[in-house]
Each structure stands twice: as structure tokens, then as C-alpha cells.
Image (cartoon, rainbow, N blue to C red; front, side, top):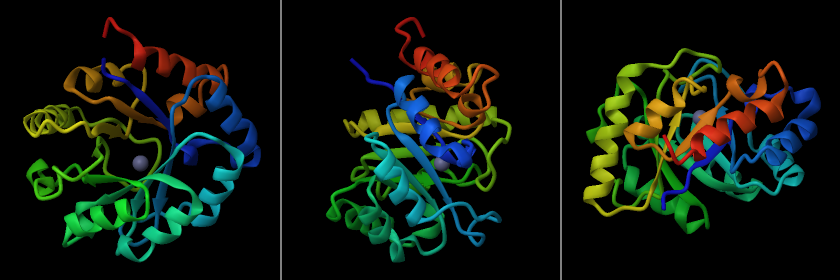
Length: 224
Ligand code: ZN
């Protein structure tokens, strides 16, 4: 049976109450904690780095799902592995030799994820697809939290799910960007099994635990 993973994106949390936010994610059934690392170069914004990841590692037993939206990620992979990352995902746009970077991540004991911007065709991942432990489809243009979901990315998820099936790959297919109670079912139907969520989890009117719980129930629902 397919297992579904919910990965709340910690940059949407209230950093002044980080430990409470992480506890709320854990108690409500989050599977991973997603870390959106932005460098102000590959994307316009700067967010968090390895020191923050390391602090989250000390605060939580959940696997840390690290998404590197940074130029020259190879230079920093070891730092993030040492900080406690479980999954490290890199953008094909930043890796001229994607299979090499995937192998480097795996050699450090982490699961290797590959991802692509909305404008990049799925075929850009082909060379590394048989090696990857995780494929992440961006359903917004990377760079900011709180953006609107791009419905045209549904067919990209379907395309990559078909490729993974053809390879008999057990890699996770994760989606990131504008995932909420309305869009999660669309991506699940398209073949995703891991869901990054920002504001829908952390800005829920009844609090983070309620937000995570509602999304997790939807992700795990056998009827969807
Ligand atoms: Zn992300």
C-alpha cells in the first residue's frame, strides 16, 4: 500500500515559537519537516541555513526534508548532511551533472532528491531519475512562501509518476508550492505521495496542530 507523507515547511512557522510549532507538527502527524533553503542568488530571497537546520534537528525526531534552492549546492551538501538532514533535494538548474550530485548526497548517508522549476521540462531529470530517492515537483515558482498553486503542474506530476512506474522506482514523488486542502487531492490523484505545505499548516485559524491534522487526514484518506 502506498504511504503518504506530509512535510510542513518550517519557514512558514512562527520562528519565535519554533519548538512549539515543531511539537504541534509532531503531535498532529507530520511525517517530515521541510526546510526551504534560499540563498538570494538562485532565488531572490534569503531564508535559513545549516545552523537553523541543526537547531531543528535538536528540537525534533522527525526526518528533516531539506530543499536547496541555492546556487552551487555541491559546495554545501556536506554542511546540510552534518546538520542532520535526512533528505537533501537539489535543483537540476543548479547541477550541470545531476547524477554526480545525487551520488554525493547518497554517499553522505542521506536520501537524494531532485527537483525542477515550473518552467523546466520533466525530461531535464531523466539522467538522474533512476538514481533518485525522491523527486520534487515545484507547483509555484521557487523563491517565496505563500504563492498560488499552478494547476498546469498537475500534468507534470502525472508525467513523472509514469516515468517512475516505468523504471519500477520506489522514489517518493513530492509536491511543493500552494498545497492546501483544495490542491492536495489534485496532486495525490496525479500520483504524488509526499506533500509540502506552508501556510495551510502554520496559518490555520485554529493553530498549527489543527492545520497539520486536517492535511494529514486528507493525505492519508483511502477514499481519495
Ligand atoms: Zn521546498
